[in-house]
Amino acid sequence: MGMFCFQCQETLKNIGCNVKKGMCGKPSDISDYQDLLIYVLKGLSIWGERARSLGIRNKQADIFVIEGLFSTITNANFDPEAITEFINQGFSYRDQYKELFLKAYSEKTGQSFDEDVHDAATFEMDPENYLQKAADVGILATENEDIRSLRELLIYGIKGAAAYADHAYVLNQENLDVTDFMQKGLAATLDDSLTMADLIGLVMECGRISVDVMALLDRANTDAYGIPEITEVNTGLSPEPGILVSGHDLLDLEELLKQSQGKGIKVYTHGEMLPANAYPELKKYTHLAGNFGSAWYNQAKEFEKFSGPIVMTTNCLIPPKKSYKDRLYTTGVVGWPNMKHIAKNAGGSKDFSQVIEQALACGNLDEQKGDKLTIGFHHQTVLSLAGPIIEAIKGGDIKRFVVMAGCDGRHKEREYFTDVAKKLPQSAVILTAGCAKYRYNTLDLGDIKGIPRILDAGQCNDSYSLAVIALKLKEAFGLDDINDLPISYDIAWYEQKAVCVLLGLLYLGVKGIRLGPTLPAFLSPNVINVLVENFDIKPTGEAQADVDAIMAGA
Ligand code: SF4
Ligand code: SF3
Image 1: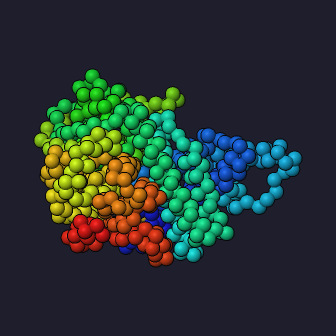
Image 2: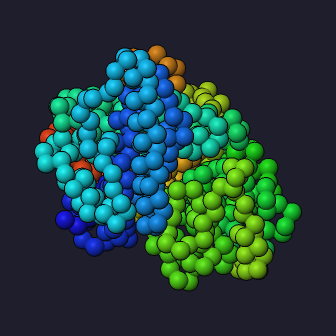
């Protein structure tokens, strides 16, 4: 059996990538290695769960699970050496957890442990057999399509949560509930006694964890870098040497800013790094000069036009072109075969000196005129405008908020989101977060009595800000149900972080979400029915018809 992957929105024919290479460029062997890594993480989680039930934890193993999950997210790591190294380490941490548990068990009970455990928790293997084993433990190993669907929905929600937990962890914030749920959920996907109802319960629990992890990351970001401020970001290039930073990791950007200051270099953000320009503790670096480019899938043409070095701190990386490959650096869980990778040094920090040297060697960038993007609508910033917003709602100037958060992607159908933004009447305000915004954030939609018609809360994880704004409005209007607010949800999804955000919204009780441009291939018809019946989820339709329905509150 070859690869099978259906974790993202661009999966082949909206069924599954099952040929030699996924639509994202992920080769079959990487897909298989990632399946095996997930299997090893499930085995590790079985022992982790048992050990913690006896009050023991292996912190390094717990962090490893988070990083391992993050490395399998779409468009993060394409390097077979990196993924096999993750598998090797996974065996080692799995066995550490096993030993810890066995020792504690015999100390506690006076007996040795002799229950049967799942193959994932015990199998041993030489690396040359990894691919063979992967073929037996991938997604299709679960035959019942509804159970498979719920297991994968749970795993993808957990993967998204892992990405956010990792960002929070590097900024010294953790939530053990979140850490422990990841392993509980992973181990549960091997338990054949669990019914659909049990798995739906776990998926909803994942929604709670999603909200918690986004709250954790919100705290981590604002503690480290302050409350985002409404900021106008320049999208042009100055004629000095420059470095472009993409992905979601604010700490990487901060380290690079510190190391490059005073060297005659400008630093620009790209893609999901745009929101960094609004944080006081990052914008204080005057050489943080703006944002260049748009969403991840445009990187081939945008990186080609940027003549300095580029750092990918997280997904989304696409297969690099020769024209800029020697200027591209990966760091964190991102990987591409034989690409320059900046790892943490023994002290836990990263040395970006080779990037800085290359920026100076590349020389001045070609000057480019740009526009201005207005960003920084974090929930605390928006709530400082609560008075005028509430007045505008009461006076009928704002009739509806439309949450258009999520991801952007290659599919032409995503023009739908541009069309919706254009067709929404002057009395509608768009709340956005994530790279989905690049479909409409350059449109001049004007303002409503000084309140911009696009409020950009930040990265995909900052969708949390949009939920907080909704909850605060509910409070201000004395409503019992979040669904009584004049807010509609028109969400664009692409990868697993969007799954995490979606589960978070469902956990908060949001109903009637439109999801597009396609419904996830990993949702079986029965699972879709459950989501429709309980949450009134619907696929995006034709733009004008959806706008009419949204404005009518449907
Ligand atoms: Fe296909 Fe998406 Fe998986 Fe890539 S991540 S192999 S495009 S389903
Ligand atoms: Fe974008 Fe990859 Fe999801 Fe963080 S950068 S939202 S797709």
